[in-house]
Image (cartoon, rainbow, N blue to C red; front, side, top):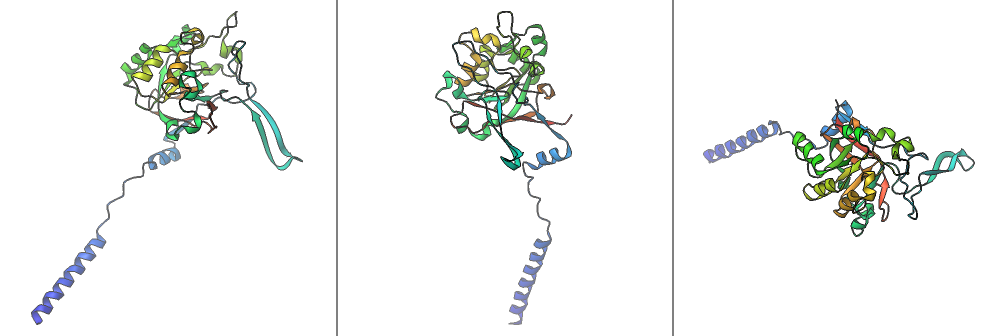
Length: 290
């Protein structure tokens, strides 16, 4: 009996010692939250936020199509109240604006080739965020305002910087954003009124939509096509090809010269307009601090 009692006592003591040892053992550290690094980077200044959006006002340049084609209105604000009898404690406005005015987002349904594809209201929100690659063609544009990106333009960039990652925004750096506050310089018309500005074309759009898996393209000019795309076949071939493939466009971008060639993340969230073919958008980029 006494032997059995000692056996039970030893078992209980061993269990107590094991329990105490387990309670004192350090717990393994939980894996870091995926956004902690971003939050810490923003707080510390290790991550910069670059605003890629042009100011939106009554002087914002808007594309002008020739008759008999209809044109979009620009931006017109209308005052509702300004701390007055119509609203003593608040200031606000209502506005008139086209979907494709200023820095804006082009959805696939904007173009005839994508007419049965999504508009902005049904796009998944994760489609607005992606890594950015910046293709610098400022030298070529300085020599030729009608510069059109080609397959070679993309492939030459990849030779130096590597393959364009999936889900990327492909942004053309042209220097054209410096003209955005001057409509005459922005459209750069000749004596006949024909505009001249750089952009993407059929070759680049075909390559990016068939041999790469991108979100879309971005430009500093009024449209994603170069101006000479108006007389191409098909007309505005980047629009036709890009949107027909379900890809997006960002236009009239600002501060593209502040972006690194790679390493930035671009966020471009259009308004959730019912059946919206596009939307003015505040585009931002997260970049490692230099």
